[in-house]
Length: 471
Image (tube, rainbow, N blue to C red):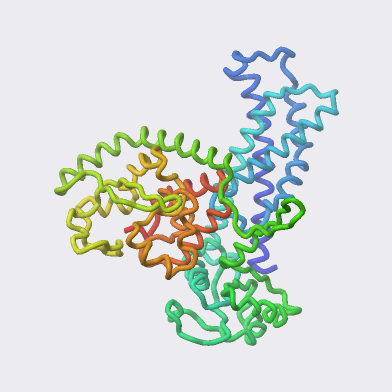
């Protein structure tokens, strides 16, 4: 058995074993907490104290149910998720389903007396413990990949901006478990971004290179007008054990959202709909208000310290106020802690560049960790912005960019945000492709959910601490 196949076998096996350990331990902790802790003094066990052994035996008997639920949700695959929050959401869903099934089974098996409160604790403890153990497995998997243990050889197909991003990302992020052998393209051109990348040949070379380089996956990134190439790729690789993974472009995202709606007997194809329903807008606004109030209260001491440092380190106002364009093209005044000199735009509007020399002594640090954006939570409370959404831009630059980039103005269909899906994927700053950032914003708008917002917020903290693109 090869090293790759051994890792593919043992990592899921370790995950299953740790899940079982977590579940049994959750049964134990829930029993102890319910009947033999301070909690019992608040809610007394009116039917007496059950037998500990019965709970533990039932915990063991229920393991197949847990396994089936997690397996049906594909929670035992390799390379599932790099970010633990993705795993956490799925764990909550699986644990909830498992507990409901178990409690339903007990209802019909009346000879076993059980405490409903105990099963609430089993649910809570199982989520916490399984998440902790899953985090350990993810780190173990990343540890092995960074040492070239169990990695899969892959090749990129295509020569567009997304192909460049895929190639660079997996060369840099070894913890994904991919080793990029090179790229295939029907024509060999040294386009910008491909200068230092290994060209493996046109499509006809794919079968040969798969054998020579032991390639296991093709990461396909084709422009909309090259989609017919997929049929050629399928034909060329016929009979070869190779996995195709396609990165969708904007056309794919849009067509996946097409819906047919019948009105008075006439079918209409809905090409474009409102991004958020009335209730979704209420949920998002409530979430924004609650989180913004908490952030402003918690960070108040930090903002006081920043205010003092900004005023002492340079001349000028504490806050930088600038007109930006938000929802439906409406203008509002956005607030930030001033991080640049007061004459930073004496020669007219200018985008921030890497290595910009207009920063104040403290400004670059504020910008690096996004501390200059804390006052924007006031904008959120006022309703000008949301916590998560496309980043707002000035009208001056919008007028320049709107005709040069596809669907640029679609970003104004929702409130702009302090952070966004593009930013947490490393797409910030002048050195990242603007069209790719726009496509990420559109994807967020078309796929919004509260869980998506929470995920982006968690990833924002990671980006603030470890991003190399902040400047």
